[in-house]
Amino acid sequence: MPSTAPLTPPSAPGLEARSESSPAGSDPERALLRHLVDAVSDPLLFTGPEGKILMANARARELLVASEGASEGRRRAVELNQQLFHTALVSAATGGASPVRRRDLSLLDPMEGTDLLFELDCTPVQEPGSPPGRVCVLRNVTDLGRATRALGESYRRLRASEQEARSERLRLDLVLDSVADPIILTDPSGGTVLMNDPAERLFAASHDSGEATRRRAHTNDAHLSSFLSHLLSPGGMRRWRGELTLVEPSTGAPLPMEAVATQVLSDQGEPTSIVTLLHDRTEAREKARLLEQLTTASNELEAKVHTATAELAEQNEKLRRQALQLEQASAAKSQFLANMSHEFRTPLNAILGYTSMLLQGVNGEMTPQQKRNLGRIDSNGRHLLQVINEILDITRIEAGRMPLNETDFMLPELIQEVMAEMDPIIARTKLAVSTSLEPELPELHSDRQKVKQIVLNLLSNALKFTHEGSVQVIAAYELATSTVTISVKDTGIGIAPEHQEKIFEDFQQVDSSPTRAYGGTGLGLSICRRLAAMMGGRVTVQSGLSQGSNFTLHLPRRMRRP
Ligand code: ADP
Image 1: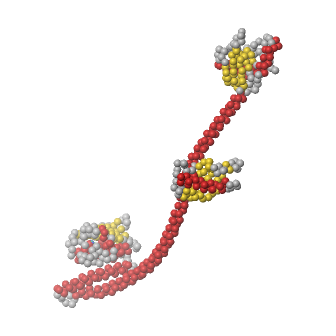
Image 2 (image 1 turned 90 degrees about the horizontal axis):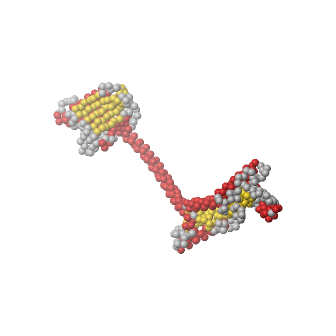
Image 3 (image 1 turned 135 degrees about the vertical axis):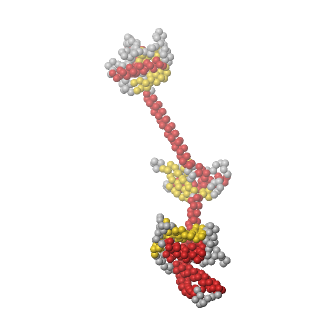
């Protein structure tokens, strides 16, 4: 058994050992007491009024008194322990007489070098005739401290996982409630564990809802249970998909549902729950019905289009045949007209020839009356000849039998000739007729006869439809486009915009009434436009009612066959 030893460490400040002047044997009771105190495994100390250690049991000495020959490390540990112990005492109770209860004190184990935690418990004692002191007990709570810390850590972890589980559950609830389709979680015996709002509306009518609503929800629940029986029965399926016909609890409207139930297994493969997902097929069925209707309508439409296309093809064929017949008829007509015109012209020329001879007095002098009558025959004959010539031209052009004779010629000479030919007619008017020719007009390569015919026609129209004012023939050349323009500009009756295109068609006149004031066939401009086109040119008009007209022939300097 260890014996108490005097506390006389050379380097421990405040330590003072009670003298061992009287050995243990001299006071058997005291020796027994020392043995008893040494046998206590916790450190026991007796301190003086200043906190000096006066007595210590074996364990206290291990911690607070360095034995002779102790290593340097242990000696240092003991010194540190002394200081810590002293500080704890001083800071706990200065004056020495007050008790110190349960104060934590950390010391170093000088043998092991590990940290030790003690609970310091000091009780003041006062023996008669002795100075006051304190009995201090240091209870080793190192393991208790560790255990407390471990417990605290476990508790903290528990709280954290509890928190985590709660948030997980919240998240799950949010997810479930944000899904529009009903979701039900049941335990392996079929008891409902969880359902989202849409599922609740179907299967769990609240108490305040009507009797009918509750009954329908109950019926829905029964349907669901019978659906789940496929998974609940021993050796049942792990996953089951099928159709469920439920009803809307509040209205009783049928709800065709597609349902999928899946068993959730534990790590050991044991069923822990069943998740059932329902999906309302009403919309899908409606879409399918509409699609079917649409397909039927589309097929019908396709059939109609097919029939219509066939009819159209038949019509087209008919039209094509008719067009061919018309073309042939038109060609025959043109041929007929060409022949007839020729047949007309020959006798008419003879009539005009003989009339001219008679007018010149070849068969003797005639009375003025006879002359007037013959003059009428002559002018009507000439008019008829002009009509016949125009018809002949049109038919020739249409039949593609109008020949083109290309030559090089100068425009001023041509215009001179036109003016000369029209001179008798000009003379009968009171109009100021003039020409304006650009000095640098180039030589033209085209059909001179046809150019002349067009200018004659335009000028004769201008003279016909102008009662006062002027008629001007203007020729110019546009270098950039190599185009010659011959314009016939008058101050006559003009043409309204709505008639300006029509007058270029065959037999079209602005005034086509039987009482019209101006003669003519309505063929002149049509011929002009066609002849111009044959030479790569065109005829345009600028006019307005009562604002005069300006007809222009545009011709490429060198003729271009279309
Ligand atoms: P026609 O002169 O034989 O009737 P045209 O084809 O030459 O046939 O002319 C067609 C119509 O265009 C004329 O009837 C007339 O109404 C109109 N027209 C032609 N030139 C002029 C013009 N210079 N001023 C007014 N109207 C005109």
